[in-house]
Length: 361
Image (cartoon, rainbow, N blue to C red; front, side):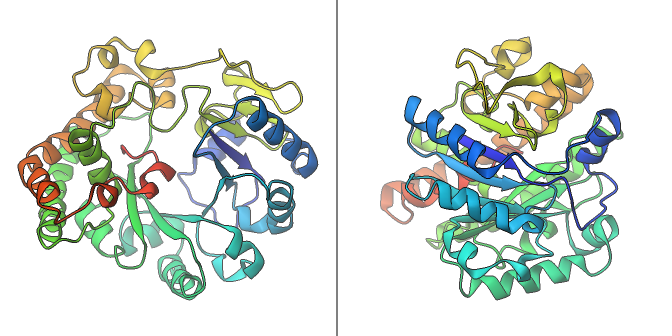
């Protein structure tokens, strides 16, 4: 179970594409302060005790959550006796302000980055890319957990360059395809994406052959499913309704962070709880997913895309997923041989960091 807490709507950046801005424009947000920490803690405690599950996570998000560190500490204090992975999602520009007591309590820090340095600075402001990496280098000396890059790829981003520029600065790298309704030049993007995947795959396979599993999460996730039989019947991100709760500032609960604020997709609140029968599995909403041969690897298309985007945009993301899966399928003989010989270990391929991301872009 993942408890994803939106602890502030404030942010120190003004990224032009941010989906939260669109949510703010469409829906009235007159709530600036989160629910009392004790109320959130009580809800999570009750939910964990009523529905025990292994591998649960507590995620702090925003806005920029580092603008509300005192609130984070109250939540952590209230749940210190519960076996939760403690996760921070941040834009990284304020990591130098992270209190050391908080740092030592976290298990994962996920940092959002937009492509390579040129692309990132154009979208988020000059100098922000370098500032993030400098901050990261500083905290990694003391941080006992893992750092994960959450790359967002726009139509103009080079996947190989974007990943390799930062792969040694993080413990693991994941990427997402920019989630937008407009189709644009989809085929041009897919052609460039395929070329970049080929080059990045060659890099990854070369390291595998030398006995090193570079933590490139989308490759690892697909390879783990295909080689180790780790299959999915619902969305990998958990947005099926009983594996992920997005708890908004006002205590309302949703199953996807991109649907926050839309009353159509509210599933409960911290006072009344969430009926466990509430489910929105993507593959039950779309015939394409239901009959897809790679559904158990993919898990189904993004809930937000399934519910709100036109069919051609849905198909674009499916094509991108099929490309990724096919690229890993092509090197399965090498991966299986390396596993059989002991050159690489199943536990290295199926790294726990995978489960802190959506895994499939």
